Image (cartoon, rainbow, N blue to C red):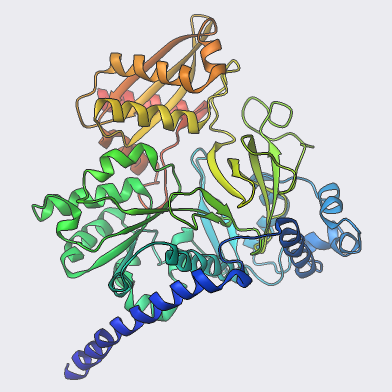
Length: 528
């Protein structure tokens, strides 16, 4: 027992030293590392060409590389153009059906060298069954590299040295992965957390190994609540909705006014997965002062972008194992259900324009090739390659040409919450037929008083202001818009019923087809 106490004491005594070193390293990298392109890729075309050439070289002897003759592509004078002309566009279903199913069976050198040890389970926001996304050792290294770059970007923020001696709470999936004798499977957050550097895990990472292994989400939350007074948290990492739930439970358990009563040094929120704006007002009611918000674009397929400076959009990671292509999000390239056509128009990083919507294709060191990740983005800063995520290819609502994006919907919900002074943490929208024409049904999760009729009028007015196509279609085609206000617990219970509670799971902003029918049937049961 005495040895254990002495060991812990030695660890504790090292923490300020580690924090000082980390602070100095962060500031040094921020100031001195343009050579490493930590914050800005000055030549995106060259960076992307290098990435593509390296990916093709590494995968040239795989079954995929042989099928599409990567070696011949590498001998071309225009590698990226030859690559785009030779390799077809893949979505998940096609990639799995033709290639990745072989990886799951344990076959090696399918679409990337070696055997795939990990698969990230992801169902996105609309699919019913889990998708198995390969996560190679090279991808884990790439994610760690980009994560360190974002850590170094803290040098651009005015944080005291003492902050770097505190702890970070990462609210993610279980690190106790499923294993079937061939591969491990689980949330990407569980895979990456299980591969944290030892120095970070021992000195900074919370909730720690024991709690992070817990698969029961409610039990994990309860264990974190119990441990909360023992920790000194300075940074949190995860999805806004679940941190809001956690904070509310901690505040209620310990009879606090704000979360800063228990974690006074909390200063940073690294978030991703969903737009933060709809959550911000209600989230900040749980704080004594605002946090520094750092957005990330970390998908199951890779770490695509991150916020590298205060109050800015995210910057694409163009020089770390991901090759990007962009498909104009138009009727020419996508059908009415948001599915991509067989031969879409594709553009490279230097060919896209600010202010336009694009779906993202990626080729990665996990064996994804010209892969439709499912998100849509808008370039907002050409010089810095900064983007905003505007929605999902299948989450745009366009029954009759209204072209409502998730970005439009998020903004309307945010405006409603701000005007009425309420927190709206969840919502979803359905497109319906209405008297031979069309309608939109909104379901809003709010535990504060909110009149549904007034909410309908406000949402409708905001969308007319935000989207000209919607305003025009409301004159004739969209005859009925209706908002229904529901308790938040209904949304959470539905997610639990779907097996999607916690971690990085998000409630879909648009429900279509069978998923819309399931939601409506569920509402009938809970309403009696």
